[in-house]
Image (cartoon, rainbow, N blue to C red):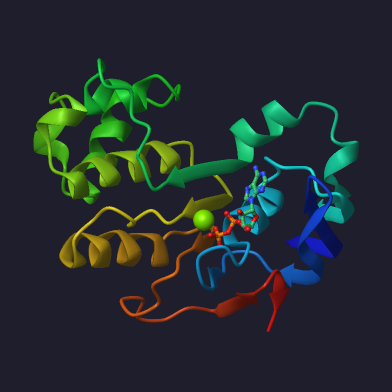
Length: 203
Ligand SMILES: Nc1ncnc2c1ncn2[C@@H]1O[C@H](COP(=O)(O)OP(=O)(O)O)[C@@H](O)[C@H]1O
Ligand SMILES: [Mg+2]
């Protein structure tokens, strides 16, 4: 379970998020939506522990994040990230990009690639496959260590509608808490909860 208590955030003295409190139970598919500039990425960065809020508390399973001694270790163990621009390493193959973040055996990596329908591309480099295939590679990398939480910020921002649909469906079906920030709700079939942001407030 993730809890946010009275979270506010300022950049350079300008308040961007206003007093946000919410509870996210385990294994839910949560979508954060709102117009460009409404604060989605800021909120997602805070929930995912990457950005320390100006005010308020963040807890994972009842533990204050600021009290966790080794936050990098915590992130590696528990959290997977997917971003708009896939951030796969260009001089490594799709397979090698996943291999480098995990101790899981080859068979398990291959099984995951099959599940995402990119097994045949394992030995290709990121710029040799389509945008949608690359993004599925990035999702595979986020999933391979079976994190309890997956955070995705506009993961379909540069994909066409068919590939967007595929990435959304994939995220929706994961056996994890998935929190997705997107300005485009139209292709998301179902969610456990939609958080709408307007000018940094939940509405
Ligand atoms: N690192 C930053 N420094 C200063 N202002 C920022 C920074 N990141 C975002 N902002 C501002 O915060 C507001 C919310 O941005 P953001 O969280 O990226 O919204 P969204 O993801 O919904 O487009 C915008 O006005 C943006 O310009
Ligand atoms: Mg954003």
